Length: 578
Ligand code: DON
Image 1 (cartoon, rainbow, N blue to C red):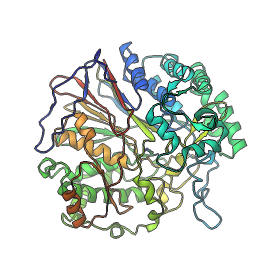
Image 2: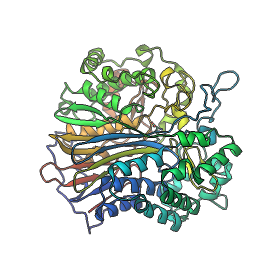
Image 3: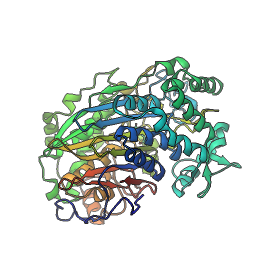
Image 4: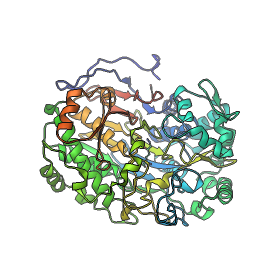
């Protein structure tokens, strides 16, 4: 929301814009605090907490709970995610509240008797759900880094659930299943879900009100009993009962055993900036730093924004790092991920040396990749907004980058009866069978095989960038495998092309991920001759979709103003500042 009461117009160009890189969209500006999220109501909740003297963590936790109400496709208490924080004193932390596999999960649990994946088994219904981490993660963040009590940060979410929220055009589209299958049919398959999201058997329409009394009660229970209410108390009982009845694996023991982990962020350097980003079990930070290291010796600005020279180099680097993702990366508590090696300058130099500036290296020649990816290539073309990221900065300079998810839109589409919230389908982020792609076309192997209580590999990449010890950029996105490349391009746009944050977010994106061996280009803004030049280098192109929903805040260096950007691709993202 950009109300004139607290936001003001700013000059169009903030940084040193490189030739050919000026788009000139105006970000929102504020002096004291800013929240960017996927919902105007949730951003306003965070802004109000900041205004009342809460810090960025208080606001982030309130936004996290509010999005579970206002943005049910992705906001959640039945999923998991990562919160990256940098406090004003320079302390940083990466709170890993990723879901874990239930204790009874087995490596082959989504395969039929012939060893083939059963369609949808890892992505729909209660069996697709990992043990949720969101409540534990948000409560831990508040206890360690916040200043307000849980009840106070939950109050707005409870009110929104009880009073109801208006159904937006974007929400109603997500419920009619524009992207994959028929969402309404999925809702109908589970009476507990139909009760929340259907009215007379039909999805809610724009202008309707989404009321969630069961969710309000669940949030009240958390306000009264803390995370224990969810993991040991009445909510755990409801989850346990639903799982037994409907064939899920999550038990009360799984819930009681769930622990978020506070990890050290990955730290990297790029052109004088310092980046704090997400370590495993996300692949995001490793690939982001790897990409930047490969690109740094070149003048990206001189190549020209989205020139064929740049896109080719970027895609070739992506393919190699995503191939590494498939082989090396998984839950660091279960497998040794060679983080230092993969993010080293020496390794980046090897990748650079291997890139032919004129020829695309077919993915099949990069490794022994399995071509089964074709089966799900179609899903990759779709517009997806099913994870969600929010960025928060307060007046003291504390910053939070939080990405959390149910995985696919509305997760498993399975609402816990009586508790009113959706469970995730995060189990699909495991490699259910080596070489078989998941919903995002990603393949994996041993490192990301299913094991009891293991975290599934993620691509979520909440990232905070500083310069000379001062906050410069807070950024993150949904988009499955495309999260990492989206975040990387926004950072390059800001640092190399001198774009203001709104231009950096709007600018057309490209993506490549080893398998499928396809270079994805957003259809608007990549000129036909650039596409032709890329095809001539040997790339197979797909120019059919838009993706990701980057929510970023930039600190304008000379003035110290906070500049926030919405991502117009989503139709709902909203800045609230004061
Ligand atoms: O953790 C991951 O990488 C995925 N579960 C994220 C899913 C996602 O971004 C969906 N949104 N488009």
